[in-house]
Image 1: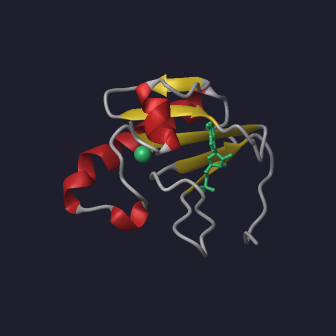
Image 2: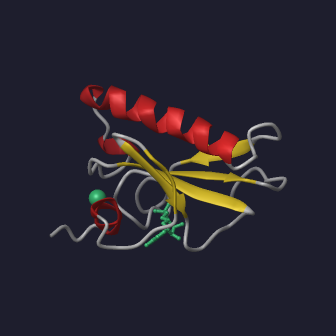
Amino acid sequence: MSECVFCQIVAGTVPSQKVLDTERVLVFHDIRPQAPVHVLVIPKQHIASAHALQAEHATVLMDMHLAAQQAAEQLGIAQDGYRLVTNVGWHGQQTVPHLHYHLLGGRQLQWPPG
Ligand code: AMP
Ligand code: ZN
């Protein structure tokens, strides 16, 4: 049994509020939403972070972007726009070591981030 909470969500042993479930990608609501819409886009395959991506991951990475587009449409934020971000490592404040994009929207977001 994997100790990775996102792998457990993929396996169904940890519950999640799913938005999209495709062959290689899962989209579900973040438990601590930072915007009216805040979902996570993850590969079903365990990849530690964006910094662990390799050329062989090209298909799953593209699938993540297509799923993010579809989720943004489904959740009604595509027209006004949104943010798609991935945190990497300690300084990036990555807390779950399984690659994920945060898809945030539904309000005017600020830039630059803290
Ligand atoms: P990061 O800090 O960029 O690694 O993002 C991890 C995100 O996962 C945070 O926004 C958490 O709120 C979220 N998170 C952690 N555990 C769960 C869970 N079981 N279900 C949904 N979201 C989670
Ligand atoms: Zn994992």
